[in-house]
Length: 194
Image (cartoon, rainbow, N blue to C red):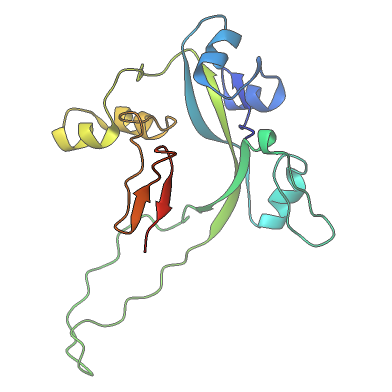
């Protein structure tokens, strides 16, 4: 299995331009950063594009392209960049709309709300190992446990959710189903029994 080799850099621009190296795991990334602490982050970089095609043209070779005639499939270790669609900020609309009065017409209590203009933009996101600052979450509990306990602030929870997944405990052996038995000559394998 080939792992994604994420750049090791102090910021997203350096991750695209000239990283210190590339690593799949935190231990390797820390070694490339001369023993400094690293944290895994995903960050938007560059301008926003109005269409997906414009973003694909601007970042040709960095992201996979599925358009006819321009198909590009990256090797698995180079898939640390992706295009994401974001809601564009609505300009010129700073006040909240006036509250609606109940209409009680046509079996409806409230009138239909006007559709909000939702425009989207495309932006490149880079996942990389950031060198240096950031909360140390190496021995922190899972984000869900901290959120339920109410112990963490918003920034710590956000940083926890951006970390690579860690197993809570080692994986247990698979359960045996109702119609399966272990072979007498090979107790490590399971066979169906009907």
